[in-house]
Length: 116
Image 1: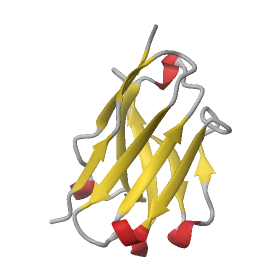
Image 2 (image 1 turned 90 degrees about the vertical axis):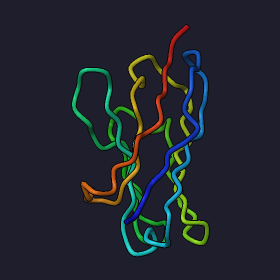
Image 3 (image 1 turned 45 degrees about the horizontal axis):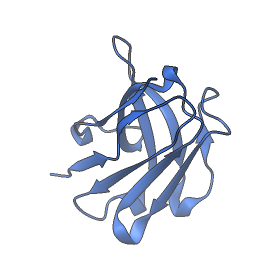
C-alpha cells in the first residue's frame, strides 16, 4: 500500500513563503505525472500544479502561476512545492498525489494558513 506524507505547512503572513514536501513510501513517482492539490475550508479539492515524468512539462492553476513552483526528486521519492508571495486565499490543506489522482493514495495533507 503506497503512502504519501505531506509536510511543510504552517502559519505564514501574506507575502511570505513556504516549501511543501511530499514523500512516497516507495519509488512510484518516477512512473507518473505527480501533482499538488489543495482544499480550502468548505470547498472542493482542486489541482494546483503538476509535473511530468522526468521533471518536464509543468502546469499550474491560473491562481498560482508565477508564485508557485513544483519540482520532483525521483531518486528520493519526493515532490516539492515552493510557494512564494502567499495570499490569504492560498489557505488550504495541501495534498500530493499522482496525476490523475488515485483515491487510495490520498494522505492527510498539510495545512497552510496565510494570515496576518
